Structures are given as structure tokens and as C-alpha cells.
Length: 154
Image 1 (cartoon, helix red, strand yellow):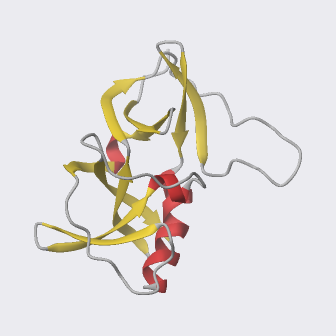
Image 2 (image 1 turned 90 degrees about the vertical axis):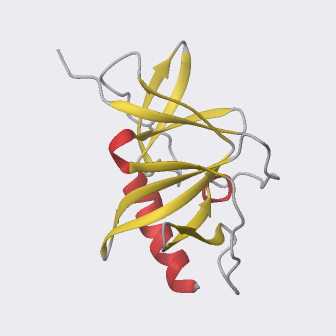
């Protein structure tokens, strides 16, 4: 029997996404973000995390969704992702964080095979939790390249 991996489940709009728990360093309440001039739209700026500057990306904008104002549930998830230059720390603003959990099945379904330009490269797989679909993000693919572009543009 396959071992169940743990995930941090994140809410963005009405969707549920998941990040492997080993990628998550900490979850922070919203705090002021220092804006950076001429930054890409999904790069909100920088925050200080125990004396270290951490760039913060908006998960909504990174995924091609509409921006939204912060609420009392908005969180910054500090992640460790593998980029072209090695490991990097990034903050990810998300609408809410639900829980650390396992998915209903140990095996993830692959991203759907759709014709056209969409390939779902940033999706590690599709799982289910309590009858709802959960999109497990491939953070290294999604944020490794995006984070490198965002921090180089700043």
C-alpha cells in the first residue's frame, strides 16, 4: 500500500489547491509588503522573515485569476522551491489556508489531457478530499521559473 503524503491545503477563489508539506516553511498572517518598482504583476514585493528578505507572489495572479483584496483569512505561505539557481524561499499570498491533511487516495490522478496549448505543467496531480477535487501544485515548476523571473525583474 502506498504511503499517504501530507499536504497543506490552500483556498484560492472557490478552488482548493495543495502544497506538499515538506515545501512549506511557515504560514504567516498578512503583513505590510514592500513594493518593488517595475515588478511583474504577480510579484507583490518583499517581506521580512526573521531578518531575511522574502519575495511574495500573489497565487491568484500567478495562476491567471483575478486579483482580490486581502481579508482576515488571507495568509502568506513561505515556501522552499527549487529554481534554476538552486533552492529559494518565496512567500505566496493565498486567500486562506485550510489544514495539513492527507488526500483520500495516496495516488494522484494526472492532470487532464486536453488538446491545445494547455498542458498543466504546474500541476503535480489531482486528488480528492472529502469529495472535492484538490489540485496539487508542482511548486518547483510553477514558482521556480516564475520566482526567478519575478526576482530578476525587480
